[in-house]
Image (cartoon, rainbow, N blue to C red):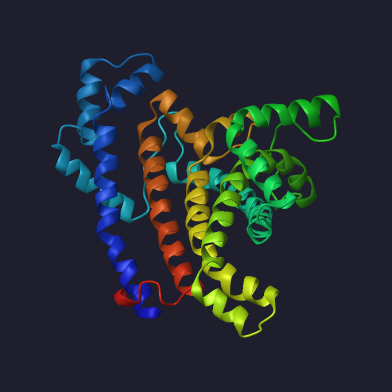
Length: 318
């Protein structure tokens, strides 16, 4: 397991370098440059000042030289300063990451708590009321857009009944009880749709596993049905579920821009969206790099979790 983990980490190094190059070139291809943005903010820049700024910022150098400088700064943890707030970009993102991480973790956790038992029961009790209920509920969850469900939740629970806040954020470290109160609606809006996908996947995966020979063998040996289902079958059936949950979590860590806007949730997605509107290029670069890097890391964690669920996975790579 240790050798497998080290090999997987080493494989990520070239991926991270390629990712950084793509991010740099994407921002490089955007119209205008940082000085144009500074001019818009400060009310215009004369030619002499522009020439001085180009030399100071290194814009008079070829792109590959600037990429090397930028990559070196990234390795040292230096992402530059925001052109809008004049604060370090790393600080801007670090302040927003906990809010997105908090929402994403609770949303995915909620979806798994709902989906795994519901999908398992639907497969075990195939063609029963439980199965039909799971399929109908999943179909409804997949069909309803997240933003519409979020607005509907605010309308019902905040405006009509007045029992939950419609927007805002309180960190769990500030007041845990109050933070949960503000978290309920955004987490439900995220978790309901994610649970719909995961329930259908768990049901399909369980049905596939139940039909396999090893399940028939365990049953013929007289093992209790509960043990066959929950100790052997479910463990193998969870592998594709773990994959989807990992991808969903990675996607949510990128920030659900619409939901964060609806609930005034100060997450990373909203930060990047605002930076794009304001052409705050250093924040855009660092934000997109963060989005790509977290996908790489979560894929690594999913691969390692595969080995925990089924040690035979990737045995040839170890």
